[in-house]
Length: 187
Image 1 (cartoon, rainbow, N blue to C red):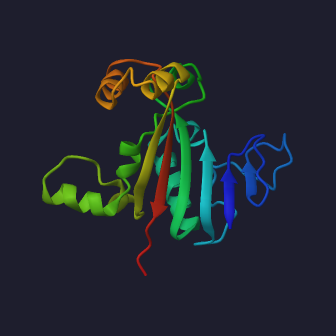
Image 2: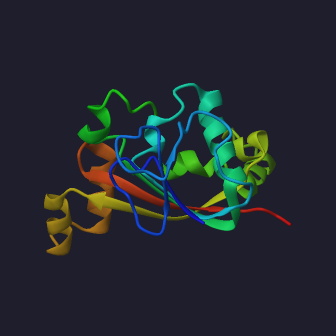
């Protein structure tokens, strides 16, 4: 099954489209901060959360509950496609319903392999994969640059090092982060 969680008006054919509101013709009405989700264990092979995760779990225990539910409904090797505004972009900063920044580094906290490496190396990162009993791996991260920076990179006016330096130093360089996350369930 493929589920489009928090779909709003972006109804996708061939997907189960779920939203908190019945404003649009969604397949399932459900609040993603209410547990359990209306899907069976291990039933989802693809999950899309397009500009959703940054709205969930202002309370850390609720956020971790969301992650645990995503894990519960994910099949082994399920792909989760998570698109979020970059936390240093006005699109993130100007929306009062955004409750937390989401980055690949945040999602790596739920990777048990990394959690175990950090333990061995005495790294103080919070091992949320072990704490929450979930295991996800970040497979891919793509940064969508604002159009003017895309053009400068394409024209060779900015090198990779220069664009990364700008991303670290300034706001409004990256508009969106697209992360592919994989659920790992050992049999």
